[in-house]
Image 1 (spheres, rainbow, N blue to C red):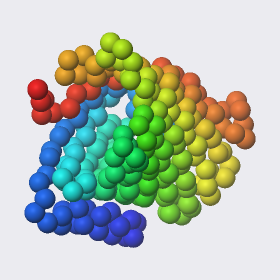
Image 2 (image 1 turned 45 degrees about the vertical axis):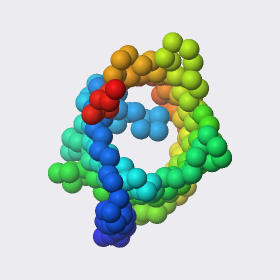
Image 3 (image 1 turned 90 degrees about the horizontal axis):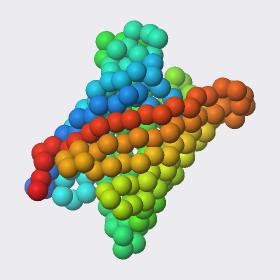
Length: 224
């Protein structure tokens, strides 16, 4: 745990130390019918509010925090994630990239261990991919690889397609794939998203879930 705190704290300090760079702040509240994380419900398939705070530095660095209610059949009632990273390149002209770290915490919980992941991603046009690595997920290593596409459609619609794969030591008994397909509709200052989510255990096809999930979000401050 000490190593994880040092890693994320170092990343935050590195971003904060981006000398004399302008910082842009945004806040994204969202109402969701389920907190879905890599194909699995983190809130007992019930609705909840979520909030993200983001600081973007004009040199490409960024940092932020994200929070949500959780219901994991233990003493955890909410989750707080801290993140820092660096994004650069141009996905329209060539390729974009994104590297960083995220620290998952469950304040007041004695049942869940705080952990962290480092990640690296690449994007090209409407396509993107990312690999997440946790070196100490309950004393085991875990990897999550994902591919995504965001296809613009007429009438303010965007088709979102996602596929992910969880594997590594932590998932040696239940490696699984998750995927989703959904539509996002721009409604003025708000975004309405409806998606179908499915997850399946590679070693036991009966295990998994499928669900329809909806969310309504906006990003503040509103700009013209």
